[in-house]
Image (cartoon, rainbow, N blue to C red; front, side, top):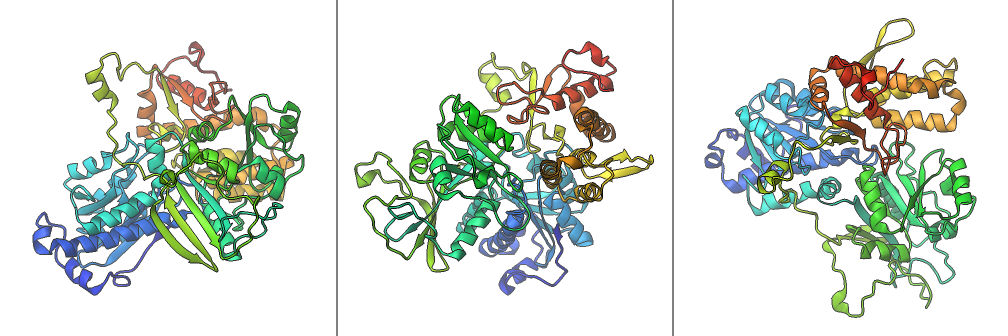
Length: 605
């Protein structure tokens, strides 16, 4: 999804364009234009990169947000691009393709250092090969195994790289750098903690009530505000409510935008005192997970399972443990739409990072009318939690107040690397690890994922080779590809043309859930072989992936999904880890070993 802007069609302000008409790419750039003017120009383009980075929000699952703007020395935007979804073309590649020959001697503006998570260094290579002379980076990549890699690679090829806050410093630069942090706050929080970026959202009257004394709450806020909430849901991996909300409001918690990303619905209930019929138990459009205390109402758990609702048990149900679990599941952003009791528990547990409060110009009173946040144990006003970076916005007749309960973590925390730790404590060695975990495509070994953006060519029934955008595209389509039904064939076509692996998975899983009769009858016995053939193709045609796989010789590979007990290792190692086992089998084959001699692998017929 490149946004190509023709030469001369978009410029920053005339003053900034005049400053940019000087050669801003030479090392003496600061001597040609005053720092204030050059910083203002750089800040304007970085801010545009930030806006681009945010453009996929609501259409795809939350992911690290990348935007790229390529500007010529005359100050003209030659090309733009943004990462549409994890597993699609990098923003830098799209921008280079859009700018074409105008890339040479131009400047590329990136809101965040490229990740190059897939071993092919596509983003950096595109900038270098296009002849980009200078790169301005908003922030370094927050994930430690990626931080600084692209900056070093670019500088190693003679490209001038300026990082905001390091090479460029001013009030203007600091302001735009903050916007770079904000647009990637979820991945930054993931890098610095073991919980997703969590937002508490509520609507209340002017006198601080979220419902009347009878519990009636439809509607506190305006229709315009409720539309904004749908957008917020679309930007989230999951929406959390408590049992009281399910019993009282029977919500659907969908994004209601007619397509695109639908968040997971999460219900937290210790006792499972929940209705047998509820909108959240309908998983035809969006999935639901119920988090509960271990052993709670086994019969009700079976009922939920029969409806397609996933149940996850915890020894002690509390917001911290639940969020750590969903962190391990790969979630970046979670929206809490719960009542006051659960909201207070989440805030006390320190898992809420930001608050969105819709304040309606209404007064309802009521001694027992509920408030948005329950008991926090505070007895003095000095104990109040102050919001940071507070914003006020009128949304229809309501006022939206937002702010952070805790600051966005430092994007470059001082965490010693394994090598640095070994220099201090030689009992910790980088060579001891025998288990390599992979899951999300931005992980260190994320290229092992079936969601990685590596197209493969697989033969069809006629022996002709067909190109699939990823292993996941092919795997999902194989569920329906041999079924003689127009609906099944239409589903195959839609999966094949899906813009990202995430969308291909959503289409395949949704159709399998809604129309199981369209899935090939032998799928359960055929799916391992389908995945094996696709993965083998991927690691056979990409030399850098083959080398990465062979470099793990001697280590056990574990697909670290805590919820997929077939392809993944499970939450406590109880999963079958078939994807990891397939990769170990391939590794043995590539090394010329006998798969049968390796007890961690198995032979696929």
